[in-house]
Length: 597
Image (cartoon, rainbow, N blue to C red; front, side):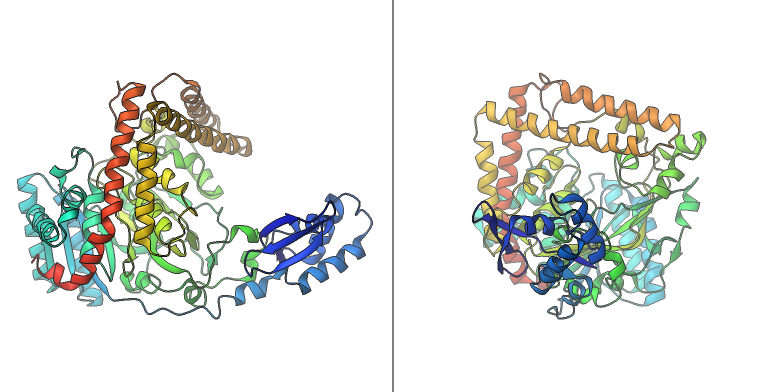
């Protein structure tokens, strides 16, 4: 099979153009008709299939099959059509990287001792089975004094049961670290306080998972780390639908399966028979080429029908900066809107198979969500499992939900040649109570602050050219302040445009699913119509204040403009000062963590 190289075109005359190949930089002069033919060959197909398509679609070529085939042969010779085997061979000579050691397993905890106890029990089982003797760091952002004592004692019990080295990092240790940095780098005092200390952030009342993520990045600067939340638990399980190899298609939906209860959800698939941390560390920090040449091989069959121009992420020398997994048990999303537009066909049919199970499934209480094959992602939406922090990883917003997806966007912005790799395994996820997610889905809630910031960062992809991630973050801080200092009218207009885009995109996705699902039951159709109507109503409410979810319900348009400036200025300060903070942490290395014990 063959596919046409992606590139740029400049006109030479009314009949000719010059084509610049994106991959090699080579330039080729061709007629516009040949360019049209090349454009029809974007997907990996046989030359026979390409010739048939060109003959039927390009004007003036009907009945000229032999001529078309000669042209295609010439394009192959000029390396404008890439053979599938040659594309795969690009990965064979990838530069191998020896990643740094893993400094510790970091656990984010906040006022949920019951959940933390379950996670630590599963880690005891892991250590007893594999004898890995890893180091564990509990980052405790709790406010309840009783919970703080309970969670510190749970960590002590874990250490006694496993003989592993552990560290407890609570509010006092975080404050100690902040003062240590402030003495060494006085100009970052205010920024690091807002990044790590709850009481120092202007929106201290919001969810603070980003604080713990930022702290973990500083304590592991220069090394790799594993990141866990307190409501997760081992083991990793391999779904029944998991396959070997790499899925190159960026449009492939993840798989969802539904269960009647938590016990069934936690028994789905099969437990992996190797060290789950090593499974991720074998890819995190290495080149994508090394991963593709190993257990996540790319087959020729997997390329069939895939547009070569959409495989920009599949660069052999790209570094896998984060690795990811799916989950079984509780959904990791506040809403279940994804059930209506982002799951595989089998999962969708299981989702709506009968009214009783559908009414249960809409809350995603007991669900498996995972990739069918390993896949490369640009901006993952969930918490990474392993992170390569040997080069500067950016901070995220210390407050607000969706902090991990914002962190993924910032990572892609700072390290455009690095990628995320999702593995076809899942981790247990059990929240403290069953959450009614469907009302959130029906309610058409406004996007969150971190959703806005993530999309703002994504729109800046490709704009910064500096090689150093720190310089890129500094440039992004200027871009954020540029919008923050715009007129109130401009800020309101920007928010309205963003809100309109969010709702229009969701309407389009749901409408497409609705039209394709000709066999859907009436109750699914009714809910999709209602959700679409809700988004349409919000989209057409042009006079409504364009607020984000965390802002007051009664805020007016001018208040939205002021709130946007506050959010952007706070995040810009974090981006501007983070490189100096991270570099100082990297210079301290393991001694920084030891000093907190």
